[in-house]
Image (cartoon, rainbow, N blue to C red):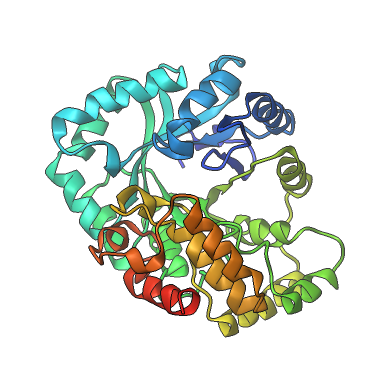
Amino acid sequence: MEIGMENVKGKLGFGCMRLPMKDGGVDYEEFSKMVDMFLDAGFNYFDTAHGYVGGMSETALKKCLTSRYPREKYILTDKLSTHHFTKHEEIRPLFESQLEACGVDYFDFYLMHAQDASIYEKYKNCSAYETVAEFKKEGKIRHIGISFHDKAAVLEKILNEQPGIEVVQIQLNYVDYDDPSVESRKCYEVCEKYGKRVIVMEPIKGGSLLELPDEAKSIFDALGDASYASYAIRFAAGFPNIMSVLSGMSNISDMRDNVSYMKDFKPLTDDERAAVDKVIEIFKEQDLIPCTACRYCMDECPKQIAIPELFALMNSKKRFGNWNTDYYYENINTQGSRKASDCIKCGKCEKICPQHLKIRGLLQDVAAEFEK
């Protein structure tokens, strides 16, 4: 590619959506150690957005990365998120505030965040793509891209209409790869068709590919002592057009594990790929709610229902049938969150859900299970 993406080192990216926390804020000491370990291992790609970690991700990067290292040591990606602007005039002030929050003069990559059919129309109506192109001309952005949450046909439409897009961030993991509701394979193939490098998000599906059913664990355990995360991340990184695979590492242990197998990256072997295929079949039989706990729904919910937590409890009960999931359900409700039955069915959560979940119906299922 002629756009200088060779400056991205290695295929492991540091996703700063889930950071180490302490006393209600980011644990700067732990985060700084993780940044040091990541850079020392030869990686340099960091990904953030204005709303990540309750708005603390960008400033944490300033504290722990950009104020501590020269600009050429790292690649920094930020995003134009739909929650933070409603009209064209608000885009530039938001962008300038992001540069300031991160402590940089430019972003290496700037992505139109969470594009789907409806959000894309908003960005067009607000002239967002033209405005971001101006930022690039001004030297405040090196490369323009999108993060994407929709079907392959919508991605093809966007890439047709917006030739200035240079990279595409898609959800890709071994469970979603051939899932018709996500179309990871088809989206990846559209990116290849249009010559766009790919950034992978949710390679571990919000942690779901760590908490495996016992049968799936035994399949991976038979291969050796590698972590369950390693099979998921190496699966995603093994495709030829992948520029970076984002991992939301929230502690030193996560970082140490990821670096151990990505520093000298090798794609899955035939035996490992066969094991992954067996695990996929096990997941298909589970009938679990495929929530990744991104919490976008929480930004929109007028009742502030803890949707991801409730779905996690529902999945836990399906997997293990434990009595204590009922206890935890009541515990969530006593901590200020509403019950699933408090949903007013406004549908705002469904419009923003990257997984296109039918959240209103699923909350009814949760209420029927836990509020008998």
